[in-house]
Amino acid sequence: MNCTTPSNLNIKSLCLNYGNKKIPTSTKFGKKGNPRLSLQTRSCLGNGNGGVRSNGIGKRDGVIIVDHGSRRKESNLMLNEFVAMFIAKTGYPIVEPAHMELAKPSIQDAFHACVEKGANRVIVSPFFLFPGRHWHQDIPSLTAEAAKDYPDVSYLITAPLGLHSLLLDVVDERIKHCLSHIAGDAEECAVCVGTGKCRLH
Image (cartoon, rainbow, N blue to C red):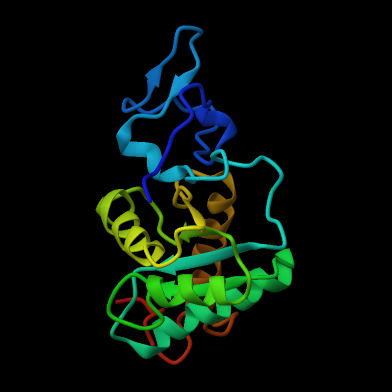
């Protein structure tokens, strides 16, 4: 299952949200000045079904939210909680958690679960902050391996979280809550609870 790229695809209309930032240096430009994706950013695109659809999630789309995976059980369970929150927020019919390594379910497990639930297209959303090696190499490789068993199912690997304005609010909220906690004005947040990590040293 090889990833295909429309030659005139505009990055700004796809899944890399750079706001007013410059287009990455790995982007090439076509005759009309439209940015074209180089090999390094093609994992944003789906394969089959004519490439990326513009009509959002359909009833036969499966979504996999994949994080790194941890040897710490509590950390892995947090992904399950996030996926439950995501389903409640979006109403998407098929959403599965996956860990890239170290824990189950794997990307292959999640891909299989999506197909079993009726998906004919799978959207893999990396729950990673920036596009490092895992996004460039490991997740595409593991997803391609999982897709080998389903030649009629296309898939898409989206951009990681990246430079998104909503993350500014998340970081700011985390900082303020932890400061409130050490001042005795707030309980530990759901991330830190029971760990004793949120304290001055």
